[in-house]
Amino acid sequence: MTAEFARTSQTKMNRKPARGAYDEETIHAILDDAIFCQVAFIVDGRPFVIPSNFGRIDNTIYLHGAKASRLMKAIASGEAICIGVTHLDGLVLARSLFSHSVNYRSAVLFGHGRLVTELAEQMEALKAVTDQLLPGRWDEARKPSQKEIDSTAIVAFEIEEASAKSRQGGVLDEPEDMELPVWAGVVEMAQIPMKILPESGLPESVEIAPSVAKWFGNAVGH
Image (spheres, rainbow, N blue to C red):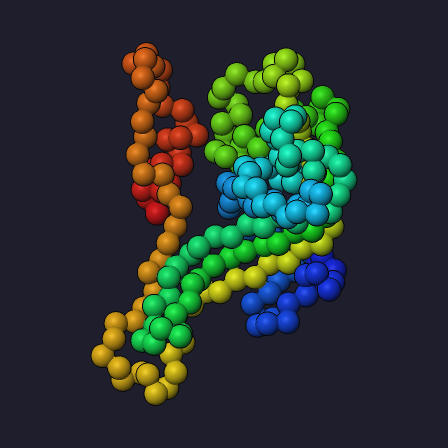
């Protein structure tokens, strides 16, 4: 049985608790399907929510950015941080407007951050972030130089509390609405690559990256 995060006052769901999950397997899967997350923090009493790409290793989320970034400074300070990820899987269109909904998967994480200073962990973090963006890309391009690493803030967010919530399924109309002459159903949604555009000036002898070809091929096949 997979490990579970403790159900706390921050993560326990009171509304529709049957849609909730606290196990690491479910939460990790939601995170691993995402490219971006939303990071919430407070600076001088004011709330901020910043989108960021990220990488995950076990229960650690890695992010990187400019050293002067408000986000990087907030995470590195060790203050409490909240991270959210959401996938829109479908529009649930009911016969009545009140019964409209969405199919989704989401995860909310609570914890504290730290600045990553060891070179080995910095490289592991950057690999995780790169391969979260596109699996396999780390092995295809030039690795970061020491100068590039020194000019970048790399931070680690340790997941201390977390929960997931999702909805899957069809329309849940009220019985009295079932005979209405209104179309109802689910419009499935997905994040897929649309078109590959090689960089101008790229020599014709340079073949498409395997990571790109694989992702595009999987999306077309799906």
